[in-house]
Image (tube, rainbow, N blue to C red; front, side):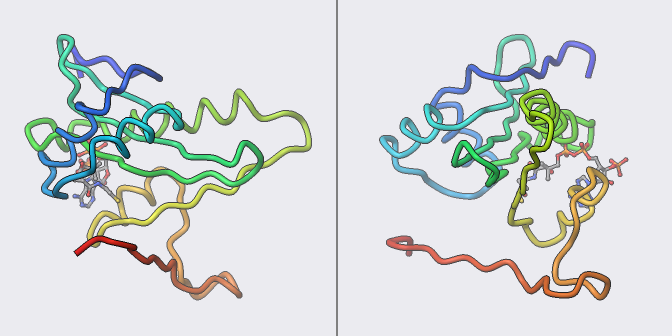
Length: 144
Ligand SMILES: CC(C)(COP(=O)(O)OP(=O)(O)OC[C@H]1O[C@@H](n2cnc3c(N)ncnc32)[C@H](O)[C@@H]1OP(=O)(O)O)[C@@H](O)C(=O)NCCC(=O)NCCS
């Protein structure tokens, strides 16, 4: 990761939508991307000023937190950048947390990416050990 920096803040809507395309996820509406980056806490990886990865926290301001849009440009994957981005956001929450408080962080892993999240400490669900943990579920509205 020599020339690569990883910090909180500074993600633009264009950088977000470029990364969506680069990892093959398709298109995000520009206005929604603009609103989204303004209302989330964003970790950004840069190589010589060029954004090559991001990860976002979306929160209710209380205890519910969504980890979303964890993306590293294909030219830079498997070099520890995705791990560094998620760790930055976890550190951010740990620093923000007051005594007696805790956060519930949820995410939807892409198929085959579960180990990436497991090595960061996330619990896969469903699993045999934790009673009550069913599958995560999603719904799109308006996406074809
Ligand atoms: C998933 C992603 C963010 C991982 O970022 P990365 O910088 O490549 O990952 P790291 O180098 O930090 O990986 C650390 C460890 O996580 C695990 N890991 C990373 N990518 C993995 C993959 N594709 N499959 C399985 N395990 C993976 C490995 O244990 C890896 O360690 P290793 O390289 O020593 O084997 C990146 O591959 C990506 O952007 N993929 C496309 C978008 C995507 O699917 N994002 C996840 C959305 S849920």
